[in-house]
Image (spheres, rainbow, N blue to C red):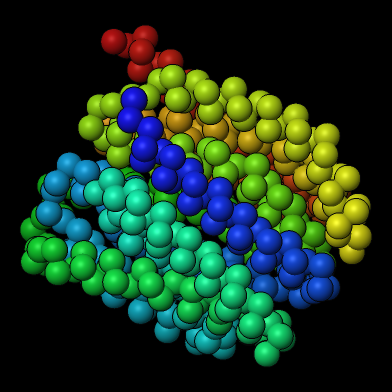
Length: 374
């Protein structure tokens, strides 16, 4: 197995995620939970609108670019037009220019990453990824101290500017040709639905929590997600590496086993040490401590889901992925609506873990069924 690409992605992910974590964790020490929650509420809205706009999803681009199918410029064009429409809709509904601009940032970011990973340009990916995270830190601090909390989302918008270069190159790569879409509508549509459902699961929790339990609980929950996101760095690294490999038939089974074993260790460490970190460093967010302990257990099923997602997308069997994502989304919506009001942030954490576990179990059952039929 060639590991140079994995090392480059891994280095960028670890360092970049560390930089981003420093920024958000520092913000948690100086911002009240209410303000922290409100920021993530509008980030969630922008992210969800961005995903609705991305007809050319990151995974779709990775698979087709890896297979050298000339459809990138068409997908980029459609996604940018849809992003512009989402910009207008969100600014009309919420009257928030910062959140509306962030939609375009997310669209450009996703299209560019799909291009880089599909071409296996791992070194370039590392440079772009680190540039964005460094800009998040530098601009985030600057805008916060210049404009207070209101400047943070604008800083995030500007941090994605460098990715526009890759999107422009993708548009120039080939002519926009809508006839390329027709024979591939099944995979593109299923993959769009899968990413939409999955991202909805990642964002709908924030959109539900704010009106249901308030910005303060959302602030504690958002901090818990930041800590859990650090625990999932390894899973994210491996997924970005193996998807283009699975697309061309390279399975990397030893790497997949290794990341699964690592997820067990990370879960144990997260459960044991997260309360100490919260109580010592984030005394305003004590409610997050128990939530993080519970949410540590989602690392294992998340890793299982990542492995199967890459496998099925590489085989262009995205319908299996979307089935699992839909059930998981329904699970988290019902869980948070029922358990959130009953148990507060603990109920939210349990709902999140259950939704990820259900997703992993469905993947396992589908894979077992396919093997038994062959």
